[in-house]
Length: 350
Image 1 (cartoon, one colour):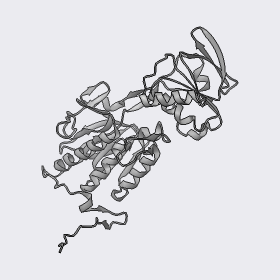
Image 2 (cartoon, helix red, strand yellow; image 1 turned 135 degrees about the horizontal axis):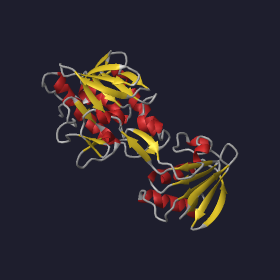
Image 3 (cartoon, one colour; image 1 turned 45 degrees about the vertical axis):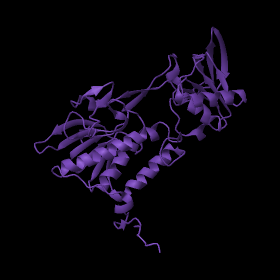
Image 4 (cartoon, helix red, strand yellow; image 1 turned 60 degrees about the vertical axis):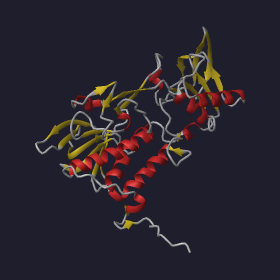
């Protein structure tokens, strides 16, 4: 039996930052995630994609953000159970919980913080009869390492932000990038649409609209595709076909825990502490929902901080922590010593 103050379900950026906030309050965390490494969606879906809305970072690569977060929580030595999915839950007489995984691991925690992002993902696949024959042999539903496409012919299908972003990014490394969309209009960010238009005008990429991939060809691995353009079919030689039609999120077994669910997200009390309808269970980050919710990493960071202060009060018989800024209190160092912030001194001006 693993025992901890807070069980954090989800090792994405919100879950990792919650460890830091809990550590400042002297609370011990254990992290449970179905993935085999920390990082959540950032590592699983787009590790090399730049992120632009993290305060203090005009641009940061997703995997670098996770690396920084892991470095930030090192002083608090969280424990991990990776590659296992939260399945069952039991509330004990003392108010704590026992969460079990599908691999029979049991974790006893006084507080549970669900930070599972959007849950597990299944890609929306285009209706192409033989697409499964080429999966992992030329057909990919996500981009993990852009260097895999260096000097290759890449065809991306889709009209949303993901398709536009990867078209822009892969244009820097691929031999040729072609973007195909079944409509003339794109539903991505205006800035991305403008950038794709500029790349097309400069001859750096090809854009086919309206168009739809109807057939895949190749001996074992993909070599070409057929694209229907208003009844006219043409064949294009490609090394990779990346259909980006979105991902279908699923909460998994957590949806059966008795939590209030709305549109595949967990309802929380955002006016107080992001607690669910079950006392002692919180939901933070993209997994939760409330009026005015913004699915941003920085929103998850805020929710994690508020949640931890509420959890501290529960673990200490209603006592509230006196907030001290880290510029004053410092952070326990990796060797157990305290990294003190420099204290300003008031000096008299003659």
